[in-house]
Image 1 (spheres, rainbow, N blue to C red):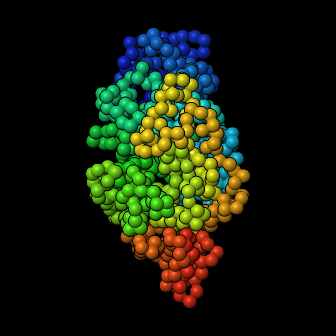
Image 2 (tube, rainbow, N blue to C red):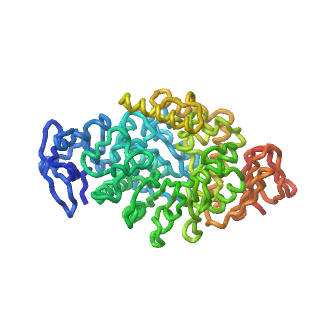
Image 3 (tube, helix red, strand yellow):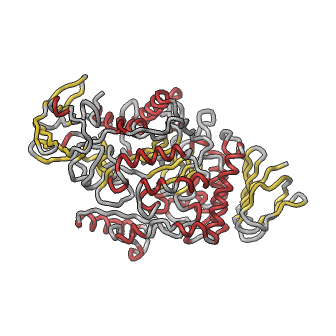
Length: 590
């Protein structure tokens, strides 16, 4: 297997469409030889004496058919941005200190989703490492980083990446990334990296100069699809799978979150998702530490999480939006767009028991039937990653408003209880745990004025079609849009913010100490509800979670002991649990 990123073949490059490739390294140009290696077509190799130069920090690029220089498609560093020259970087020189790290499994864990640029005032990996003690005290198990690969500009969500092997320089670059993972492991936290293989960003994508990385005319939401099954796709798939392996091996990452897998257009008999599953298992066996693959998917297709021996893809987890939508609607009353089908506690009850609402049912938003049921003998509830809020569900609102902007403390607390006690794997979005008042908005920093203008105008048109007032949509290119999305950490110690933070800590502790909340299979959750009186309760073993969505106090027959309540007025006396309006309790039933 060719290893272009480091080692003896550092400067090898795949450019099957090129008639000539020249390497610019340091202040000299070198001709490259077109060669075949193990059946690989279209690879170019630098002279042996140049390839042997192993110094880190050498600036280099490629002149393809007289154009360029362009950055290396497998560049590990881009000190001058995605349009500049690449810089050599050897990850093997880092001295890891995590030899005692045994890893974490998805089952029983809590994930914390983080955007590096807005998590801290500095917006760097080293600054984020300074908050690890806070995350340990919160009680999470994994940090899931939004994409860190090379993108155009200084700040961005990360989904406009064009250099998948590089770590964004303003975050600290690849060395800072290694330090961060090392520090996380020392603190007992796993790291999941969000990776995007379904599209490339609008600026700095030079891959088509080299070869058939994209399929022109076969697009998805974001542009041309990545070539996973057409001519030349063997090397494109290898490019992607070796990138995934890079994170898991070179950077000791514990898992990958695969972005929008429904946009991966692949008609091969062996789908690339199945290859991801096999890769994770291979590296797990090699390193002796769990490697977790999680797909973001809106397909409601449980094949993703079925074992490969049962014709599944063998991934450990997939996101389940149905849980988010059901909880969101029942807390907020918002029923526009894709929320329309989720307007009842009956829907939430079905999701808690079966994982999906749409399991072959009609989706009014899609105007067709959608999904299929999850086979209880092939998957467990912990394979579904669920949330009350995430970067998409906040950031893709016109003003990027969090639930904090519209819900009372009581409703936020019910959402926290449902997320943290559900049979699924909970994920928190940074700041959710203390009810951050800051929005999380869509922001970009494209240096090209015309691209910045087009991005801003496209955003306004998108929300106009959805009925939003265009005047309230912030300009993604305005620096203030990015700045106002940064967390205000002082809030975490104040009033209801501190109260909510303590609730999340208590819930994480309760989840860790109560096996019934994080164990068991589908079919082991029983649910009762009343849409008129607006209450729902579900049981996992001898643990019962009771939620009063209404404004009036609720009395329900129950004997046992209260493990946790979101309102100090809650009481369990003489066989009756009394819950004030807008509150929840977790009870050990006797």
